[in-house]
Image (cartoon, rainbow, N blue to C red; front, side):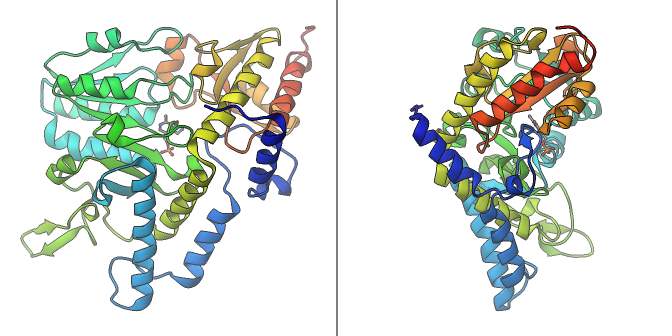
Length: 415
Ligand code: PMP
């Protein structure tokens, strides 16, 4: 990652911020990007333009407007393919979000290929969206579900990963970046080891795809899920990548319109990939917004985004460490946080922390972050999280730190 000068950084800040008009609508500091992100003007305009000039039911009509809608939808799929460097658009399936993507894989692949006595391996740091689908699958099939326990800072070493492999393991599901600890799992190495062991590897990319370059061919994962709204696109659209040879073998998830080839009163045959997995009228406007969001982040460059966020994470953690009674969860090394910093403050409940931050117009998250087993592993029921996006600046970090310093005082502590 290449550092840039202070002047260059400030110019870049201004250029990026000018695209996000929500920051002009009110005076607030937004540090809840792991939950969802703000949308640049180009995304809003692309969706507006789609509905104003191209809206029809895509993939069905034989008239010009419907063909334009189909083209817009399929162009968005091509943007996702390019962004993840998948080989073919047949391997990109649109869904509502990462949660639906992971459920789809668990229902379709899981119900077809996981059998009684098989083992599914996940980690204790998974978001509930990459935990409950596997819990349910294991229960239904009589399979065993095993949780990898990382070191205290979230690290899973190759040695530890290998120790969970055995001939019964048929599926591994793991997040690339933890939404609580911010740590990054070595998905490429773990996918290789899982394959050597005869297991498929499902990657939850919800917190990695918006922040680092993700190349599905390089990682060689079998499935990778993400959400549009966490990468500056609209809510209600997400996607997953799946290897063609696996998608070909998998049964559909939902049944109905659009996913069929031919229907009789006795049964049906299925449409070709990826439409086999996209039953019913699709979210074309959302896909167009997502496609534009990916074009936008690509125009900045994932390397620049990663450097910007790493720079701010370092500043944030250095300043937080100077504030007494503040404890950062996971690694104390900013390079292992990918913009996510979860913390506790002695004697103050996370909901009170968030409320005080809100009084100072700083938006952060408090609670269990949809990772209750991880909270238990960390020995705390709930925490507070600040998370960085591409438009955050040094000023945002200082505003956060100013408010952080006031919290214990506002709760009646002296120091
Ligand atoms: N996985 C991880 C790691 C996440 O952080 C989230 C969202 N917080 C999800 C999955 C689920 O994303 P969504 O709610 O958009 O489906």
